[in-house]
Image 1 (cartoon, helix red, strand yellow):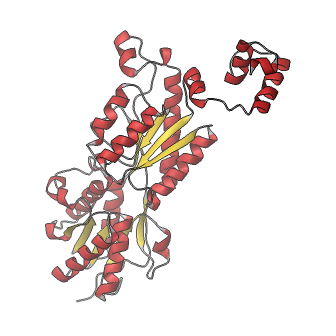
Image 2 (tube, one colour; image 1 turned 30 degrees about the horizontal axis):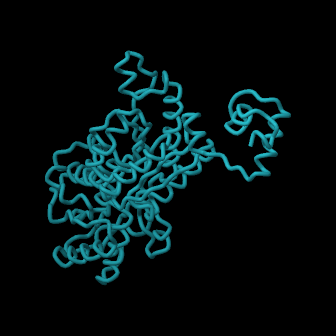
Image 3 (cartoon, one colour; image 1 turned 135 degrees about the vertical axis):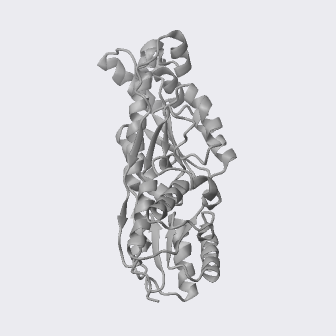
Length: 366
């Protein structure tokens, strides 16, 4: 390359590497030679020199879920506007898949990671990266045992309480809930409203359901807390079983958009009319919720805003790390007494809101 351009090897290296001072004439000669030779820059080598790959990793549990799809779109928009690219991994909430994804991100030397962790087991995968100083932001799902990591979540507990309060105000007393966290019911009965948002989203929404019942003086009936995994067909079966077993139920609160679609299918199959016989509230405002009849009352989540806020926070953390002394790990700086000036972890809570539509109505007469 240097010989073709008629410059020294050092000069060619400075032009191709994007560092140091070079005359405009020499720069033009090297660029023309590179074009003639079909030269392509070694991105990895350049990143080692610059200390940045200008890439961030994003790990979610289900990219096919429109909630995460909207959040990921916002992350992509935000980071690309800042000059970064994005590596995306889908885990299906599998711990081994999540661990492999994090390992891949680390090997690719991403500048930071946004992750919706699959559960408490994620802490073991994340801890080494946190201790090494890699900027990480938790998306939608908090981890109480990683208090030093930023988290961007939604006020799930308050949203669920508002939804169930709406049903109670309409006169409903036999209110069922469809939740992936139903098996945690005994433990969650003692969780306060303030502590609810420290739980994973489905559990936090179940805490809100229980808080609304307590406030209204309604005893929580464990048989009305119905378990379903995040699967439409499973939710449909669970709701059909509930309606056969407990025909006195007049309202259903669903804690997830997938569960909501299964519940709507079950009600249609059961022959019950909504809201004349049965009121329904879903969680997350999907496009289809206004296409069905009646249109669904839902809790609307700020999905795009959630992803945008997470990306913005991660970019801030990346910049903080670059300005840390010698760009060392958190542990190395602390041990040396030369700790970087990095802000304390933030817990950003975005607010969802109840959208009242035609799927909720007064308790049926009689």
